[in-house]
Length: 145
Image 1 (cartoon, rainbow, N blue to C red):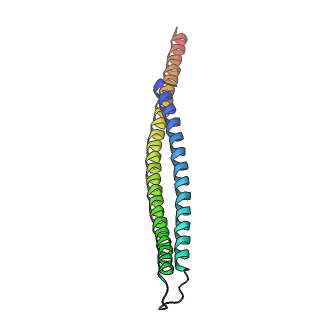
Image 2 (tube, rainbow, N blue to C red):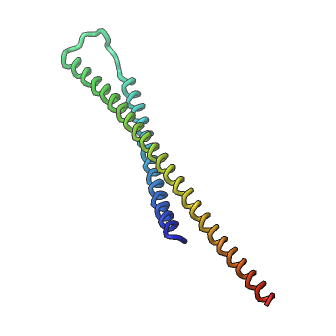
Image 3 (cartoon, helix red, strand yellow):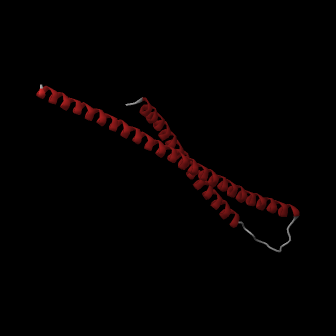
């Protein structure tokens, strides 16, 4: 095995490990995205389940402000969950792009290693053929002598 082939195989092992790491990153990002989507859906449900009673009934200022503050917190919770979901989707897209890039690099390197192995195999075959031809010529020379 040539030094170049050994180097290519070493780099291929490294790239394969990097691809596996990217695959793991994508799995983690997809799981985080699923959790964020679930949290956003739950926040929206909680926001929709608010108890609206006594519409049009006068209330004291403290009750009104307390209710308003609670509604604001619920709305903020929904907005936060939606932002986190968008961030998780972006991270998932980023991880997917990095995995695609790693796969492309790995497949290109695999082709190089295969090509180098084929060239080496052809060199060995050529050397064997040359040895066989020299052997046949040697026998013919002995037979003629």
